[in-house]
Each structure stands twice: as structure tokens, then as C-alpha cells.
Image 1: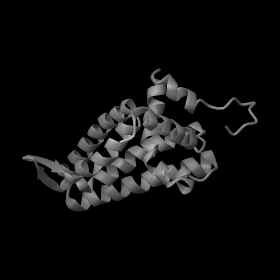
Image 2 (image 1 turned 90 degrees about the vertical axis):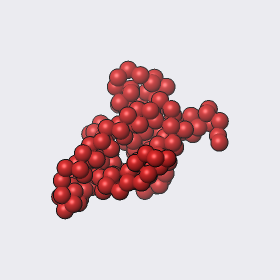
Image 3 (image 1 turned 120 degrees about the horizontal axis):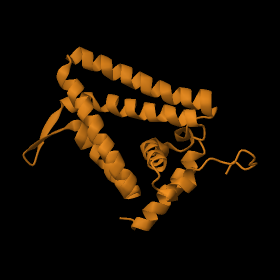
Image 4 (image 1 turned 180 degrees about the vertical axis):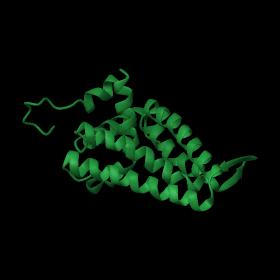
Length: 178
């Protein structure tokens, strides 16, 4: 297992690369919406499948979310904990929806959430950023979106100055692309 500072350095390098594809504030807003919709949509049908783990009934959504959550926590414990809280809320929402609607309605909601989530990502990149998504060049960035969104949230609250330096906008008179 990599040392904590190695993981922190890796995360900061990945984040610095990721931010180059996400400079426009409207694109960032579209990512917040898209990531929330995609996570909720993707987990919705998985909340209906349950297993007994050590005598506790757990949904497939939770089981499949745990490895990526562990990865996020290893990259940055503080940002990972914020994502954990968000995951609990979104999994609860998905579970409530799945428990309250018919099977056909659940799949309809799933489809709408996924389509809207993907559409928001596409609009963010094509209309606002005018650049292809980062995961086209770097497939590992697929898992970095939630970390980016949570880091931006922490920075907006006045926390994580270390990440704020990485995510800071370029000066308007800068000739550099970073």
C-alpha cells in the first residue's frame, strides 16, 4: 500500500491535470449536476438487490461503491469522507425511490437520470469548456470527477487551501495554459 504522502502527491498531480479540462465555472456546475444524477441513477437499480453480509442486509449498490470509496479515501481522506457523506445521502435517496415506485417506473427514472447526467457532462464540455472531456485522454479521470467536485465544495467553504492553490483559476492576462 502506498505511503500517505505518495497518495496525496498522486492525487494532487491528477487533480492538477484534471482541472485543465475543467476551467469554465459553468462546466464545473454542469459536472456537479451530472455527477449527482449519474451516481443516483447508476445505483438506483442496484439498491433493489440485497445480500446478507455478516448478518446485515446490504444492497449491491453499497457493495459495489465500497472499492471506489476506499480508493477515494486513500487519495485524500478529507475529500473521501465528504464523498462518503454524499454517498450515504444519495444511496438513501436511490433506496427510497426504489422502494416507493414500481419496477417499470424505477427503470424509467434510471433512464432519465442517466440521460440527464450524461447530457449535462456533454453540454459542460462542448458548450462551456469547448474541449473534450478529460477521460478521453486520461480514462482514470472517470473516478476523479467526484473528488474534483468535493474539493471545489471544500474550497467554497473556505477549507483546503492546499487544493485551492491547484484549482485556482488562471489570471485573465496569463499566456500560460498552466
